[in-house]
Length: 432
Image 1 (spheres, rainbow, N blue to C red):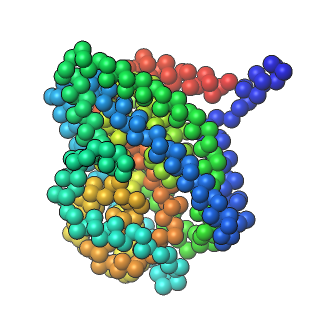
Image 2 (cartoon, rainbow, N blue to C red):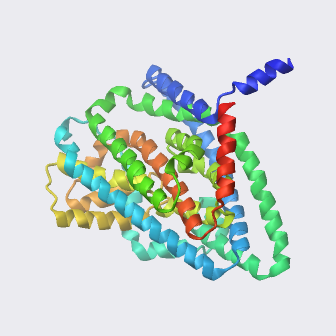
Image 3 (cartoon, rainbow, N blue to C red):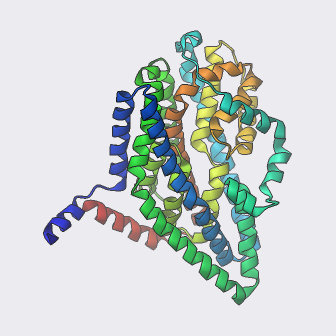
């Protein structure tokens, strides 16, 4: 019996493979139960339960890790320097991502190959009100929204930036009171360890959640709906792959490490983010892994949650490419000046809408009117939004992981020995 258990443990599939199997099963089930309302409701609820489990553990991890990390950092000047570097890096990378999406759209003209009037439209009313309110709020309302007038209300609503803002100040205050603050640090450190253990339990349900989430998408729209927009989907994924290999690869090389090592470490989290189309699904394990990979806890716990608002590279590529795609489909010629304006508008709008449900699609709704595309045009790509969302979410996760290592290296808070030891441990476990 003992030998059988050893054999089972030796051949047990990794989380990444389990999720991929769940992905395939979801496609099969979605095809079998196409337009079956009972199956769609069941899969939708199972998928929502998994996302709910993830959301349950995200905020306690962010608050505990960020507070402890900032308290250990303890220096407001250093925090300001790290914060400035982080925001600057995020802005540079997202601007490159938007520009790349526009460049690819101008070269390959995806909108020229379809007849917009033959596409099937999808209801987008759920996004319209969000886009209108976000558009009307402006930059000042966004900045004011970062300051939590009621921290517990922000926690209840899952509003990430006010939570980060409070946790940073709470961590600095904890460091400022010296030995008395050690009780708080020890308590929150224990909380984070407990939540990471809970995360490992929750991840056992990931293949089921992935299967349900993919299944409901395919069951609602059907595989045949992909055909007319297939070229746009392939182009979007190709552009995202190019961004990872070339631009993220160059950024990694500039700071003295190989992107392939990072991708090897976070491959399961990237697959999870891809399968669920949810960055939150990967966040708890990502924080844990980046710490084990050699980046100091203070850098990890600040950069990754902040990146979920300011560093959405995959979303930036999709937004610029989709905006140009729709303009071409409606035969609207955009001059160089108009495209530069579009780039600036996307840079500003995307920062103001992070955290809004369906944020990438909401950004498009609020942006396309500036280039003359009717809002109704987005109903034609709404159906495939989730399929592209899977890719852009995975890119966002990779981008935030890369940012963590780069900021850690720039602050000399990246342990090469710890990094190599963790890589060796993962490779040994994979070989077994």
